[in-house]
Length: 122
Image (tube, rainbow, N blue to C red):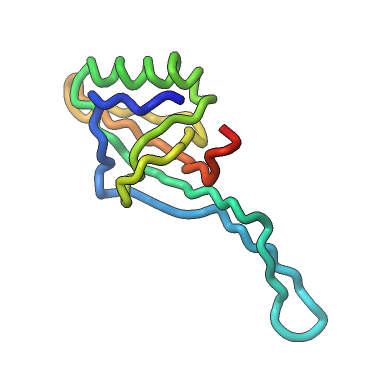
């Protein structure tokens, strides 16, 4: 499995970082009383949204190459550290990233990632 390039920045900007989970609960209305609830599934993906600094053109090219070649345009999952716990997890891109320029030859990449809750299916 590909690993996020170690030569790139490993930490998201604090500002704008988001961490959430896919809602695993099914709610059913009943004639009287509170809704009934149950789990839809037990393997619940975690969603991460963050911004990462690409400090120069080499970082930009490394990131693009990783996404195109190693991840086959974002199809394959990869290993990276969880941005909060620091543990190694399997994740994948949820959609296409967005890159913006913050200074000459400095960029910020915005990513929406899914932390996969299982290892045995990969």
